[in-house]
Image (cartoon, rainbow, N blue to C red; front, top):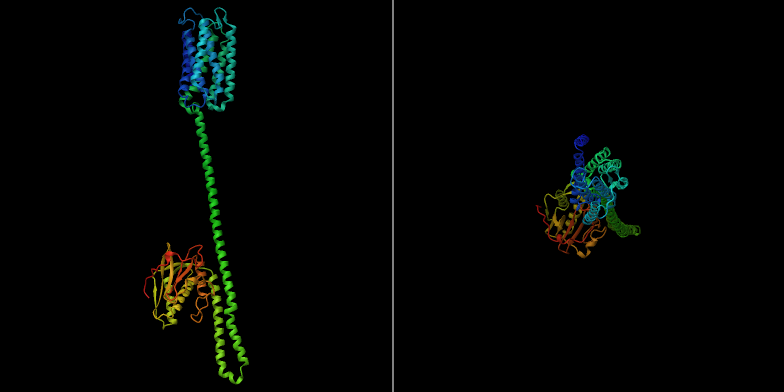
Length: 544
């Protein structure tokens, strides 16, 4: 459509030329004046927002080019606007306009990326144009056309110089092509090429109404039409491709930068997740290492206690057996039947104690190292079963049991039964001297954590000795006072810790004791300091 419209316009101009050359010439010049002024209007009004001062400089210069071209049109031979002047005046004005035009296009690339002061530029062009017009109308400006002879050497030389300057403008603009939109570069290059051809055509005519002059004006019309397409149409339809191209490029750079930043942020987030995962893993490894260290420390304590037991508790019954056996060997035969039975009974009791101690050691080893099979365990039911067994073993005892209902936990039922057998069994043993014994099993809130407890009103213990309670083979009471191996509470501690919990106790001599334990608490430590919130009475409820 563009080519069709252009062809129609050129055909119309040709018909106008056939009808009246002055009409043809005036239409061409008025079109070039309108385009020049349009370039100025767009560039001037966008000057505050443009970073590309190429178009601002060209726009200011083209305003004065349009003014001189308009004067040239009025001074053309036959118009009668300036009587007394011949064909030399419009030719001189033509040369002035072309010098202004080509110098602007040649110098404009220098202002790409440089500061331009619009007011100073307008003042400079106003002064230069005024001086040139004054030179023309005062007769100082060199002659350009002589009637009957044609163009003067100055005019021809000027046209060649203008064409050469336009070539330079084209080369400089192409070298800075990255500062322009690709389509704008293409249109500007075509416009400069056509204007160069126009200048060369104007070096050949001998008559201002001649064919060479006509061709030159057609080419000028085409050149300014391409300038219109490159600057005015692009500036109005696609301002971001012409006037605000730098802003558009910066926006694109910002978008690319944002995309890169988003990608880097995603990479950093991924790396951070990996780092966190590595830290989730290191912490777990550290927890496992701490647990292993605690287990090793506990094992060392148990080994130390075991050595003590082997050297003391096991040696004691063996010494007893050896001693009484030696007595029997040395005892007179006639008195052996009378006193020997008592010695044999002592030997049997010592052997029984040693057997019981060995069995206790084996049970401790088995319970503290066997595999955990977790299920939902009804601790209330287990506690009632343990209490019932204790009543069967010693039916003569009067003990009041208070066992809370509905106490459940996640754990190994066999191991948790051993916990309750030891804790409730201890409470049963240490209340043996109470006429009205009381044993309670329930839960209490311990700093936001649920803790199970077994409470009794028995012998109690000195809190200063609490650190020895859960150490294997350590006893706070003499064997003559209360029987035991010192393994029960150590077994409780190992089982509770293997369930991720902790165990501790509080008591007072003659006032009973309370043993607390928690389950499913990773990293729980053995017999820690008793939390303040756990020193109050528990909330156990239920029947005997």
